[in-house]
Amino acid sequence: MAETNFVRYFGRATGRVQGVGFRMFVQNHASELGLTGWVRNMDDGSVTMELQGDPHKIDKLSVEIREGNYFIKVKTLDFNPIEVVPDEKRFVIRY
Image (cartoon, rainbow, N blue to C red; front, side, top):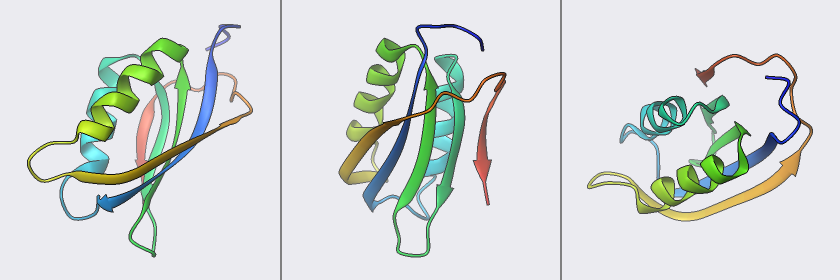
C-alpha cells in the first residue's frame, strides 16, 4: 500500500458495539472497500480501530458503521488522523 493518497485514522466507537458482531461487521465492510487496518474490543466497552486507504472509502465505511444494523447501535464514533503504515495488506480483528 504505497499509495500516496492513502490516509489512516485511529477511531473509537461507543454504544452497543460489543457482543453484537461489530468487529466482524467492520472487518467485512472494510475488506469489501479494500481498506486495511484492525479493530479491537476494549475493556471499557468501546471498540477501537485503525482504518487505512482511500479517504472516500473510509468516509463510506464511517457512514456504514454509524448506521450499524439491528444489533449494532453506535452512540459515538470519533476519528483522528495518524501516520500511514506502509505495506499493510489486510484488515484484521485484534484480540
